[in-house]
Length: 365
Length: 262
Image 1: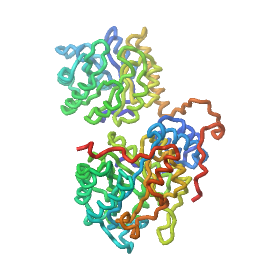
Image 2 (image 1 turned 90 degrees about the horizontal axis):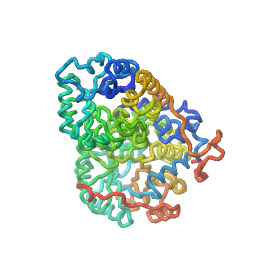
Image 3 (image 1 turned 90 degrees about the vertical axis):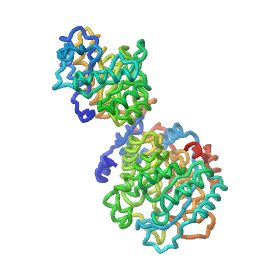
Image 4 (image 1 turned 45 degrees about the vertical axis):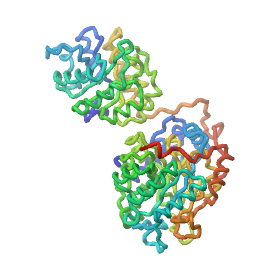
């Protein structure tokens, strides 16, 4: 990706924003990257309730009274990387497991029975254990059963994405984790993920291969969340200009302090997270914004309709965990344990329509 | 500075050369406009005479000579005109116009896309004249157009930017320069286009039909500069309701008491 400024200059761009800049961004039909910087700044904190109102208005206008639902399906926790914050890190002594295609299909069958039509296939990064051929075979099995099958696995070459698209994968999520290049190195000491630029270029490769939807994201709790937000804006802007026929989503996985796990390097509060979400919505009224079950129920419920458009529900983050709930080896611990039907009831209570299906792989050949 | 296909321009005012009373006036107009991009209808040029009047008034050291395919009714005619233009002028620059309806002179999107693709493949620097259609603009960009030239209103009408909403989308989405062409009837229209973030405007009738074309060319030059400066400085947002200077009073807000300190 060209034109991603240095992280320090991104930080500076935000620091110099005044309340007048925030006010202007809030009232502009097209606030742009400079408006996003203002909305992410500390000067914008006084405006949070007004930002929420603007974010709700834009979300309603572009997505209607709906909230989409999906579930992750963890295929494997083998990983060749050593991301210091991740439960799947090669350095961790956990039981490693990769599902056979039959086992994966059995997991998918449970999700389908629970009512999910969109499944996100997730795996640690280990080409030798789980590569394009595996995903291709699984996609062919699942495409007739699910409206949408997307992936969150290791970065692939453009040709790999093209093969998967033809097999029925419609979406690719790949998170940069942090756009802070200096911090990225020590956090990703080994494995292919060490290469910041290769990872940064991954959404472009997926777009060039024709994917319908591309998800980007930053892991909150590593570096300055405000600057991560503006970097996401730059990345999104670049991708939109390159692939105008593609839909985009942004995710905000937030590291939470927990015993025996990686302690976040910076604290990101719910207030901060909500500001980030409102700012991105005001910056880009069409982008899908995703909240996972990492977050607590009260936060997820409160944010319904205010900006986020897609929620996961009833998630298990250990491979095989839907069939065998007793299994350990999960990637992160879940903050909201409610089932899909419970989540759907809350969504309806808020006057929103839970949406399970937004596309169908049978439409494409 | 404006950059199209590796050429930079100090002026963001493009000038059309039709409808002027004499080449002498046109020469003065070009100077007063400070324009560096001058478009000429190939059908008006005497191809057999390399010293044709209209060619002689354009200083090609200072300006880009931009032949246009005015009069072409389909892609085949436009392509033929383009090749002739290149043969005569030696210039790869081309303003592509395909206007099958002689009454409105509105551009044909399907034929324009076909001709653009073909001419880009032949090495032309193509600036297509289009209706203010955002998807067409992106399609043209995808096949290699060097800029897009959406109309503000039908050519010669002097109605201004009637397509503002669509043009706003084009400006937001396009990664090639956006030049507002046709319909700009007053310097204020040109300033408005520039304030919206257009990269340049093309003006012809408004200057040519003025009682004093030379003075009007100067007025457009100033308006384009002012509009661009305003765009770069950043306009304050508009609001549908009166807003007190203190944003906490009377603004529409949401209750965020669900947010925890964690």
